[in-house]
Image (cartoon, rainbow, N blue to C red; front, side, top):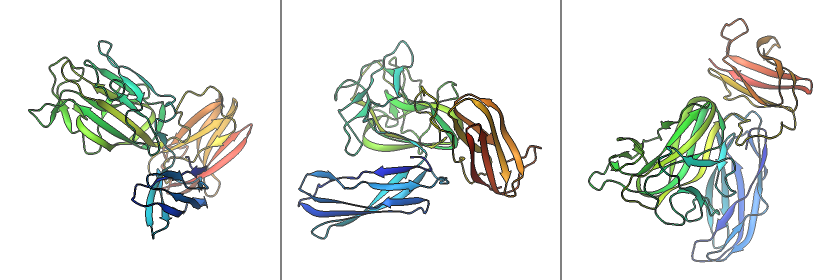
Length: 381
């Protein structure tokens, strides 16, 4: 869901209590004034013990085009028979990427990292974390069987374009071989790597760090001391801070195993990437955009550098300029002929003369043969 868009939210419920519930009613509210609730009431006639169902009709929200955060907090007040009442919290990602691994994961690939090893990544139905779902990515054998010896397996995300405010979140389940003689060491394990603008993959560290370091020596692909996820853990979240990374990236979940011992493997589900360029490509685009578009700049307010994305349905001359509140040109970012497709430009908060622009309200305008579009931004020094 991007700023300026409208979305339906479908809520699935499961009755795990001891009694049936009837006359279920849900009321949706959102904390942020820039998220408007268009349809805020849903209901269900009743759920028997152990039954599940969906509130109807779907809730509907609209996100303001100027929304500058990465998510919005919404709440659902749910009530039913027998005095049942509860308040559910719902985090609504905005301007991000979400992969629940329930529709084939288009744009995702997997391959051996080093050719002398092997790859066992595949979509599995053995374990799932997505509510109402049934699949996740697994590095290991089919079903609940153990992974092979000699793995150096890479699971690669689609191409994503970060705007400098990014964050990676996902859920994972792991059962991998550790060193019984050292609680901080593992023989097998997984880590996350990133490639920026086509560069080499380098490791990134989760918030709180990796819990293990590799003990090499049995022919595995990971170097001595490499920080990894390992051990045996049920589904748990992992968060990676991608702040400051601007440009096109690919993320890689890498799992390595040595020549001795093996457990069930590593499962990945519900991957989210926040802080994307509004026109980040999650798969290769075979056709140009259907219409002329100008995205909200990221971030907004702007402290150092604004990234402005736009889409051209056909090739032609393009002018993208920043104006002050009085309508004076502050900076010309683009004045050239561009091909059809998705483009972006950056404004570091300066003037055409190279001076720093003052804090305040500004406008940026896209002018093409197809039309003219404008949006506002706030510069805060």
